[in-house]
Length: 188
Image (cartoon, rainbow, N blue to C red; front, side, top):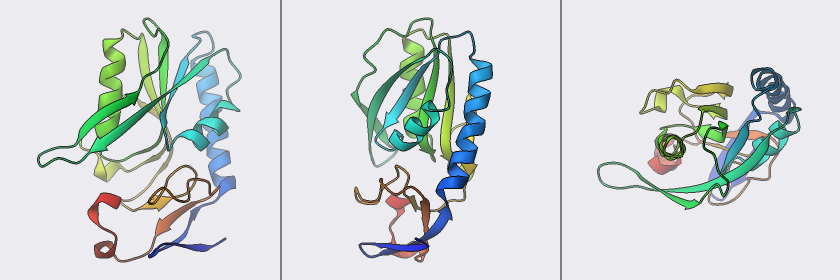
């Protein structure tokens, strides 16, 4: 599939499944080496991380554990407010944690997740994200250790990322090709 249409928006293929899998294999090799004797906990941020996390975990060959959190952002007048919906459900004090994100754009939800984990007394926190939008970041992070792909400020879907709840199931990643004024700022 080269181009797709979702409701009123048009998308073109940006990253195919093979490109994504090659990058995930490289990230997995690095994580296996770095955390070989540390028994890390991988914490996936739902809903978007589910495909990336599943494929990443297939590349992890060291003892580890997994859990998930679900966050929701609510746009406010001065700044976004992040509310945690589902917690980790396991003790994390003294543990090495790898946060698994589908995409980091502004960094609002990542800041919240990191602060919550730091309050639990974890030994270390690193971040593995499939996509990173450097020009959209509102914060500086020194713990984003694993980045699949850096992308421009564009609206993407597929491989866990959705538009109005649709297309998370697509194995490739697509970018919107409609003029920016037609998709609304919340999509970027």
